[in-house]
Image (cartoon, rainbow, N blue to C red; front, side, top):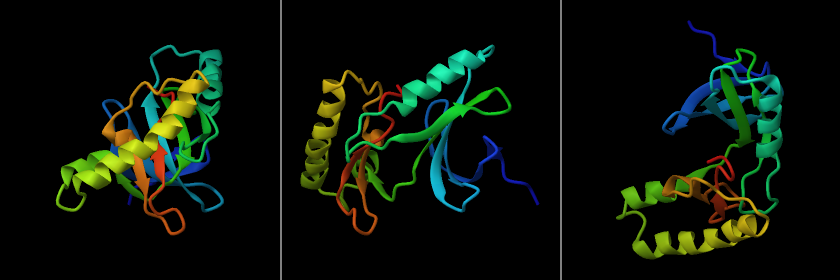
Length: 159
């Protein structure tokens, strides 16, 4: 039986839910039992503590908008090789998923989601924050009770 990896002495990784070129996003449980999405990013070799602190400040300085998922915690893990970002765990579907299943998601619903994501994207740009990785994987439609249909922009300013 393996022991789950714990990030920042607080977040126990449960299972991967997404992968990027060099990143992995996990469902994680914190010490209080709350579930989060934790993104792990390999740190470049020789990253200094002050650089990690600047990274934390940069990613937690998020544009406040209901259509933008904020980073609630970030930093350099104790192993010194991994940067982590903690965000709300969302339930729903990405535009990428919708494109991959056109029978379940007609063109009109995909275009509607894309149109709705323009407001939070525009708000970010108005505040000088560039997305850096605006792809269908970072356009999300929520399906959680009470939040059905909300368009949410993921990974703001992390590209």
